[in-house]
Image 1 (cartoon, rainbow, N blue to C red):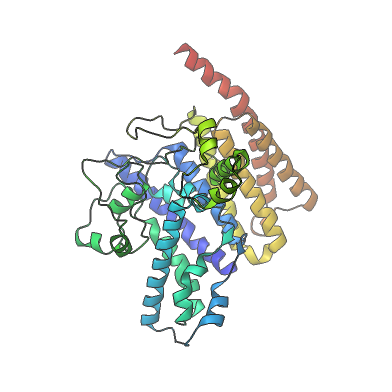
Image 2: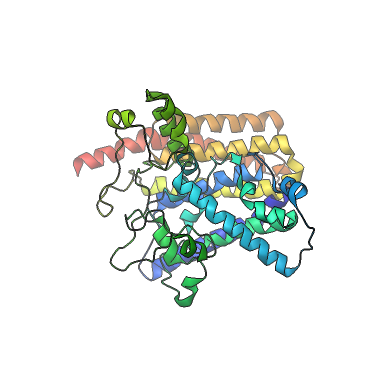
Length: 423
């Protein structure tokens, strides 16, 4: 986990730099693909995923090293050919894992967060899950294990393979000629994220596009069918935690409501969107039927609130970078506490973005807990070692959080409602 944390020290600033470049480019060419609230929600979703993964908060059914030690029929050295072979194995496994996520109800729950943005830009690539609490990906790497691909090679390539999928989440790059036949391109991935009937569940490849062509899931981007983004059952929230488990709780409610015992069991493994007949009739769920004319999610927000949540997001990034930089010194127990503070902060300010009144309570609670932690221990996870007035700044930050939660929940919301009535 420490090695992953160290990698994130460099990866996070790099991703943010690319976001800034895309936002700047959109501004100069007058084709902006970013909206403040959606962008904050996307980046915040990525931060929750980083917290979970960097702390190893998942149960792994079976690990690749175990499969390798148990099943490898030969022992091979890590030559360049083995690295290339391992990359192909990971990409092949990634295709089928992705396809499972789109085709099976319970697996869709861990992938829906990635499709939940109704925009398409580099930020939406950061919408990664925290609901993938059970790790099974290694099972799809059985061929690599049997052929003896060293697990150190897999361990190094797997995060690289994930990070390389970042670049093609953009509207600013058109079709790329002959490369369209080899790799996944922005054009192909725009199709994948689209909810148009022509595009649903297409282009499931991650790096190589050959799997889609080979297994019949390829679809070219059509000039006459501009992609529309999001999910057919809109999330209706900026909160990444809610989005992560929204589909799961829909399935759970359907399983409890149906009178058919068999349906209670099979609903989890049926095709995505399948519901028991009796529940479907009694408890209908609205689905977008006109992808070109539907109400995209939005909430009233002043420039002040937008600035506030952007600053909250940036401070969350800064706190995580400090956590990764000081990873070994903080210690695992304190890392859990640190991660919980940042996670709860993200949960809280995204509730505020949804304009829910409970945000005043959650913002106040985390402020009080943060100040209490500092007063009891006299430090903020070793921050004083690097910055003498670090704890003072954190106390000021928590005090601002408390006041801002009250202001934006009770005062500003009334002002916005009054303006809406007048207009």
